[in-house]
Length: 119
Image (cartoon, rainbow, N blue to C red; front, side, top):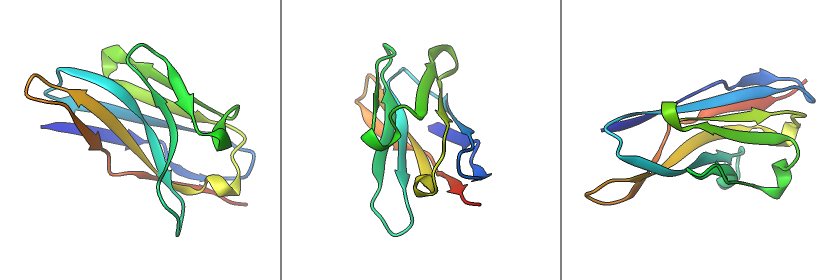
């Protein structure tokens, strides 16, 4: 049984910053890609950013230059530093992890954390 525990969401003014964290725990053999998706109100879920076990990263065009994803493999934790936040960044942010296990690979999702950008 694995868990993904997210933290760091909240209310911030436009132009402000937030840092999200996501820690994986439980019986883990290996984690490949980890990252964040978000679901704005009334819209579909979209990829925000991801980071592979080798540290390579990818970002949605909407957040490039403003968001930075990083990873601590020793702690099975990823971070999303969000700067210059805009009202359109308001969404529920969910962490995901691609687990590799001897029995088979699978993806797992966290419960999500609300990020609201508003004055």
